[in-house]
Length: 124
Image 1: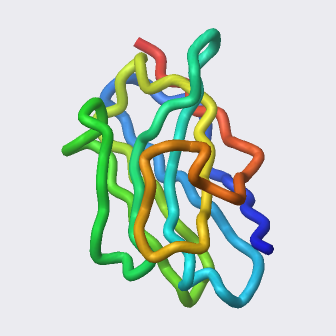
Image 2: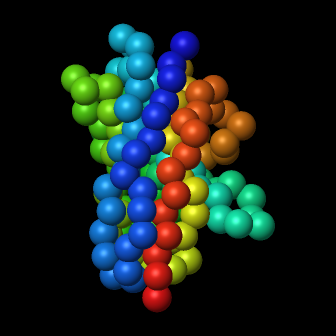
């Protein structure tokens, strides 16, 4: 069982940066593959970024590639999403997710544990 708590969201101007954090409970954090998803108003939840259990393999949605970076600190039981050059279309509630697998997944239904979400709003 893993409990996830996101933080770091807020209001930022276009072109700005934010770093989201997701703190996990439990001693087996290092055995989970992790993902970030987002959901904008009136839209379905979409994949943003993912990290394998090892932390070596990452994957990004095309819309954020080159601007966002996922990373993890197993000693702190925390996964991060560094977001640079933010755009108004990045506005959404951002969720972190975890699955007890080696490999990440791109579909939200493949994740077993979810945080409550943190709001990111990018103004133009």
